[in-house]
Length: 120
Image (cartoon, rainbow, N blue to C red; front, side, top):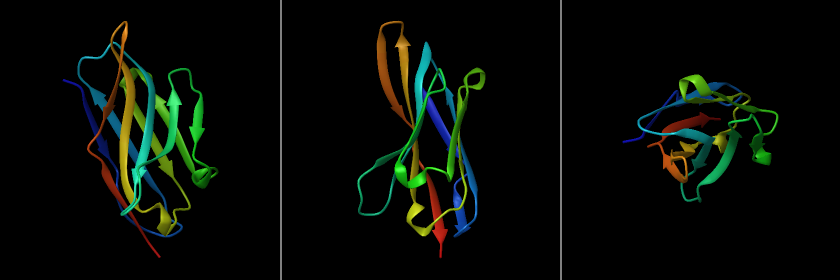
């Protein structure tokens, strides 16, 4: 059983910062991609940022220059540092990984989400 446990969400004022973390545990062979998605009320879930095992990073345009994603492969953990937060960043943030459950089987796994609320 693979588990993704997110932490670090909460309430912050606009302009403030929050850091999220996601720890992966369970039976996996290796993790290819680790990322963060978010879903605001009434909107579709969107990719915020992801990072490959080799360190290639992708950000959605709206967070470039404000958010930083990183990962610790030894700890199976991905982080998202969010600075200069805006009310429109308010959403449930989900951790997602693309991992090999065996040397030839690639599977997507999702966390349960953590709420980030940015007040104006």
